[in-house]
Image (cartoon, rainbow, N blue to C red; front, top):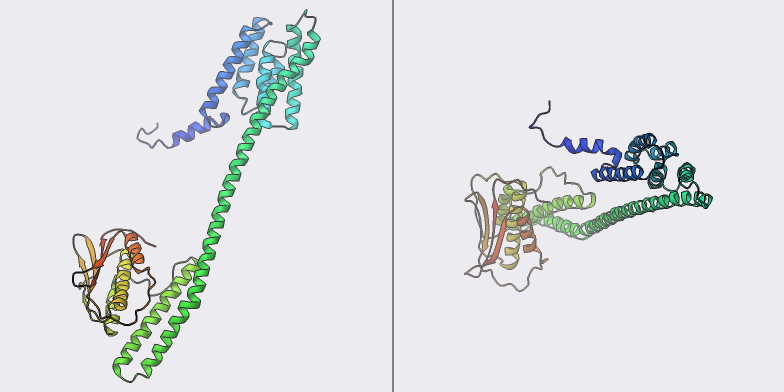
Length: 392
């Protein structure tokens, strides 16, 4: 017994199974039923054979016409069996079309066509009894009837083959386009990785080495501390850069033991900046909230970029960092006052705020930046808590 509450999934499978002889389409079955009915109607109205013989012919032709898609030889055999009745000429047209439609231009079609032509000659011979042009009709009409139906079937066969070929070519072109796009992206990523390795990694390595030498030969303790901060920051930058290069070249996640920076790394940023001489005040909660990896990385990068921008554009200005949890939201605020005017400015890439906004948006948060009333600058990011977003 079937379960009435069962899912209706297997129904289409069963329907396609019993419609497999009609190409899995219900409309093909309906079309074959209509063709069978029309042929049988024509045979029953126009026949020159005894009634019993016509009934037998109908019994033979009906299943042959219904199953012609699965067994193209059946209508050909049915035409031979009813050769001496009026049904042969009707069935032969359907048989010729079916054979050409299913097989195409091959030797089997020629054999089937020849059989059909010779099979319907007796029916024409009896139907044209007493006609002066009987021999001419017998020589031409059967050939034309079978040839016309076969040509129509060949046209449908070639049209289907052409459509299938065009569809395959379109799919192949799409696959090749995707493959070329992937190759172009991979080549560009490798080029970027080479440039980053040759330029950025080299420069940062030089900074780390020089900072290490300065920390050893520093004239005072304060200079040694600042040099050590520079060396430590350069080493961290090289480690992160190595992970980025691995992702660009091999398309694999970094296998760093320390893992990507997260929310707990903000305290390290604050300590490094304070050690380097920044006028910094941080209001961090004693217990950091549980956030997803995307939110933690985005918050870390926001604070990192905001501190970098403050050091470049407002040197020695008072900076305040605030992390708050309110209404199931994590609020990260970095604000600085007006800084001292310097003669030379540190060049920037121009993509710091754009990168911050992209990271915050990918993590499901919002970012607001702008000046303050005292001439300073504020960066404020709000992230939702308790989400499962994963950012790249």
